[in-house]
Image (cartoon, rainbow, N blue to C red; front, side, top):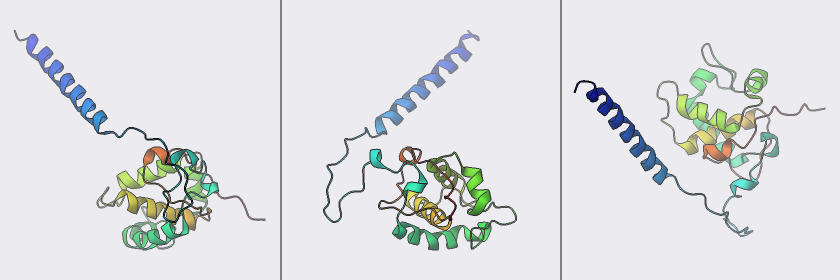
Length: 170
């Protein structure tokens, strides 16, 4: 009788895990076909399959970077510096160290780091849109080109965009 109690506990825990996974799967939206292309003002952003594949292709808009600047100043500058140069305990968010640390990663990797660990005093407090806007500001300060569509807020899409350092200016 005693041997069956741990077995029953394990089976119960596994059953709860399967139920939670099933519930999570049910809440995950199924991919929808991309909307038809439209040139009308206010048309939806480009579908995910046409998203830039590199930050060098222009992964954010200037307007988005402008929205991110005051957020960065309010939420990030006290640790990372007003010019993204880093602080005593916080790494720089621009320059050679920043780009070499993230080179070969994806924008989704950077986004998730921000999303799950920042601000340090209350991680995850900012919305996905705020995180994307701050990241757009960081990319603009890193002299990476702006594009025609905003940096999305979905990690799955951001994981398709490679982080690469800017090309040297001649």
